[in-house]
Length: 414
Image 1 (cartoon, rainbow, N blue to C red):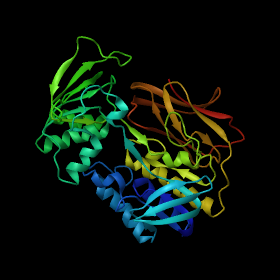
Image 2 (cartoon, one colour; image 1 turned 120 degrees about the horizontal axis):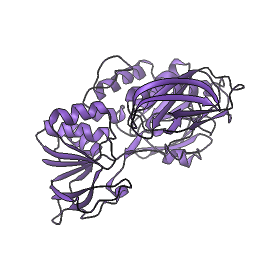
Image 3 (spheres, one colour; image 1 turned 60 degrees about the vertical axis):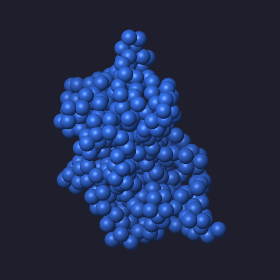
Image 4 (cartoon, rainbow, N blue to C red; image 1 turned 60 degrees about the horizontal axis):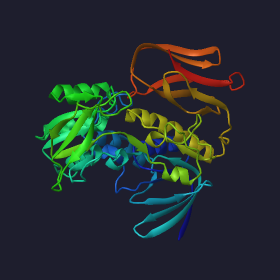
């Protein structure tokens, strides 16, 4: 087995890993290696050929590959080492990795590690939908890969379960490729995708969205899906008897949520947040395991890649400082809590207090609400929002926080 030592190892060469690497290099870390399991850098962006990326980061609308290329060129210009087609087999809490690439095994000891593995889609197995087990049932991301990268059309008559952003975008994409999208069905009483995608991908193409409705049976006795039975659901998401109807289709796309890829995180003994299913981190993006940082969709699922890059830059910079001995281990600091109307807040604690930025999601759609950040009865920050939605992340910049003057933070919506 080959033994190596590096100051900083970044696991994942998607948008988070690329931005973290660039920021780390610019912060003075010269010994960086990005480990990417695919044959090329860019991650999920490579199959996202629609535009809309970069509006915050670059002030222009870019396609996924164009956005990735901006960072890939920076990585190349900064001469950052990349290990492509490489799998990280395991990661220990003392920052030792074992990797495999085409039969070559390496053990890598790092001073700091950035976790940037992204997320994966929920599959049919996670949903336990009754019925046959025919072909023609895909996750929306798998179909995006087939259509955009492999030039393969999986079907011509499509039903989409779930209104996540990938599903909405693929509703439009399949329509443009000549397929008939019968409808999008969402079990929640509101869409789980961005409002702009509802307008641009469904409304503009006359594709109906049925809320509080789900697939209760898959029909495909001959080996290929022939249709699905859908029904309205009550407030506990139970099918309402008498609302069932049959929708013929030859393809079912599932867009029912994303799960952070945290197998390595758990293996390293990193504390996981019960709500985000990502690591619990401080305001430097450091986990409770010293020297291990996390950012992007492996930390919590983001709505915009621009915010992934912003968060990853923070993680990369602080990982570089840690590797250089300029950033101490994360202390317990002060706790950040999700209050009324808030599902979760990242970071979960403040250990350093420099340029603190809080990201959170609300529990349900709301209008004309006040966002408050409090330390007990003391109001630290507030602002009015005309519209809030669980699909859209909210950011609150707190600036510098004196840890000696604050006991805890609570973010609430009222």
